[in-house]
Length: 624
Image 1 (cartoon, rainbow, N blue to C red):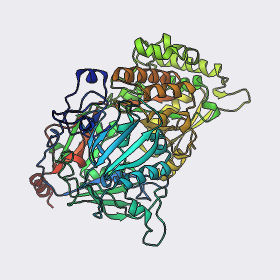
Image 2 (cartoon, rainbow, N blue to C red):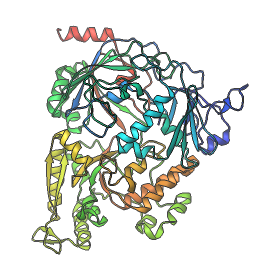
Image 3 (cartoon, rainbow, N blue to C red):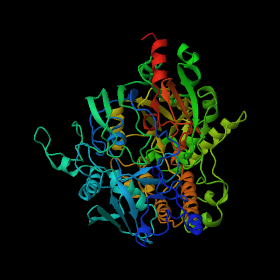
Image 4 (cartoon, one colour):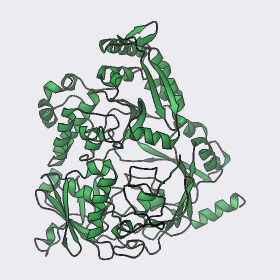
């Protein structure tokens, strides 16, 4: 959950328990020994306080050049923190710094950026950050404690996501010239110091002032005004809804810090917007964009036979990663009556023939998602045992009985006849839930048909949904696909105005407070929350709190597996697929570190650079 910069030597016992650790060099006072240059929820950070740079960057990477990137949909705001409006790509990540920086190579680890160090008591009831004296906003004004306190208050007001994420933060006060202390309403939450470390710091003086038209600025409102930040880039040019260009700040205050050496090597980053993926991809192949992260297996297999790829002008590769696989899925809106019964939701999964889809559309590239924490030690496997079983036993009367008797697995369609059996089972479950198949049409006791609309915002999903719809028709469900533009899609999603959407729930290696946003009852009815499913399950709520209050790594793993199992057996989604690597195609103009960071290997804008010789050679070969 952070970005790295320091090795720690701590007591072996602390490492074994997974406690947040830090390096304590000899000769420091007791107070100084509580100052953590880095925080980790998984063992000890890799780098010591005196490290010079991460070993997965080139600290002497050349600066310069322009990178052109395709973006999709549109945008009408440059304020990334408000629930209102659709924000331009790159704004939050490129122009705002946070108190600490997330490691791209170490799971759930972060190092000081705006903050020099963090300190907290043994019971995790508060955290104190010491701000760097050199920290500055783009307008040259220093970053102060008042800015940090303002930022917390503003973000909690601006978006329900932040309000939930920082739910346990009850106070923020100045405790020194450059020190700010956050207090919590609970003890023992190991994650709270780190989630405060992720706080983006906004300039209070900018938001307190009126804009050029004399109107008050408000972080809770969308805005077309170029904001003041403190990060490595500034917004240089905007064509609202069509493009946004970022210029590297040569006077960036943090450019010589160990956590940023070798980063942000590209002078200009230009995002150009497209309504549709197809012309954008054609634009990449024709040289309008410099790299392309491929999301389509079909395109990856069939559309890269161009002369530029064959001659090596475009490099096409798979970059392995060590991230937790996101739960990408067809997501039910359980606020709707027809999706309240888990048997109905399970029937939808039985009618999804992943194996056929993988072969016919995806060239057998994908692995089906089998957990909300797949590709990690956090995924529930087999039957619950040990500490996980102890946790689940508390809720035995309120959980599906299969949690304790059957390993959860997606339905398989490997042998001839498997899919017919799954469809028969689906029809049986629907009948148990009050839906009867009559003359090929599924209807309830009132004679109402079972119809469903899949809301999508990309053409690429249409073919997939229509293939799924053919299978749903076999069990009497009438399914349609509704393609809308990105702005309309976002509005409908935020207001939970949909039947089924395609969702993706990204996880870290150390889940905690953010689970309240994904599955917590308090988030279910808050527009814009990440609980798009609408889960209101007291058992899920209690399991989340057990996870949030886990005191060591073993407890985190057990609580996460218990939560995973409870989510799976409630059939809230129809799991889709994931890849253990990133598909990336790029024109051969880049240099990059010999070692790529495990959590983000395709960090082109962050740690790659323009190789002038390669760029000149490409220009010559293309006759430009």
